[in-house]
Image 1 (tube, rainbow, N blue to C red):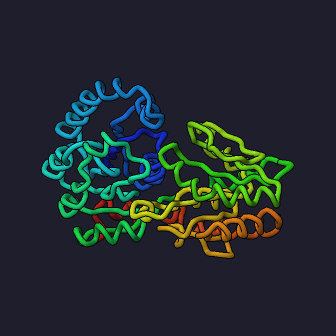
Image 2 (cartoon, helix red, strand yellow):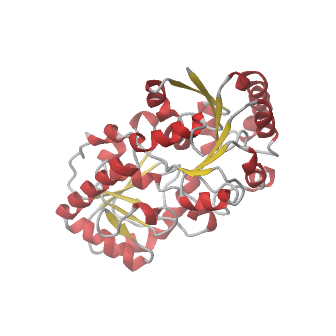
Length: 358
């Protein structure tokens, strides 16, 4: 049995942990491999961080979390055949734990799905920004057995520092989405899912949605924000995100959206929310930023929109034409099955983790 230990900062509730690590446990087991998982944060701590709550308690608890992780590195990790690091071992300070891992373990893989080497000025708070060592990603890259990147732009950065850089997108278990059917609604629903940390990207849609609301009737469904938008729209519904309800949110959408404010950090984002929407059979509209341009085939499975007029035009077309929504949704599902499913990407991950990939 080939044994892999996966380290993540965040627990299962975080999409990067769930979709870049844990959803591969079943195919790994079928291939004679086992993936064990250690997260730095527990569920409650992660929720406090997302909501920016209990700051003092989080600060007091962090040293205990770090010491537990140090014990895992020193005494647990060396028992495994391969170590899989999702993003980083700890969010603050220099890469002490990473250095220990590459010394004590024979195979260590770094997995990156965000441009953490770049500061996200829109969502990062001051103190965490001061404590982060963003240069550690570049300094450590050459010391890993392999670096796996979620998209081409991340790979361009890491390939300059490591010859063993691979691209594996963030994907879904396509069969889990295949049976989803939308719940009936008297109006067409435009849906967005995210976290408070990336809610600022919705700013790109304030004006075009307000203009569209004067022409068409629709409902905007927002999942995952911790406070309402200051928009004057006639129909806006807010839902709290819960892991147990993850797939059900897509049954309450008719159109999926992924606006991004263009920045160096945003260009390094994976188009995962678009992939989820497509897997659920939804047409999408997205900003032409980063991986969005690789996933959206403009006019076939969705629309790319850079300006207010382009957003309004794209969404108007989708609101007015249910047959167009259906056709685009089918094309999106087909793309996910071919390129963005666990079945499509697991062979690459398996080879990298075992050391068979160059």
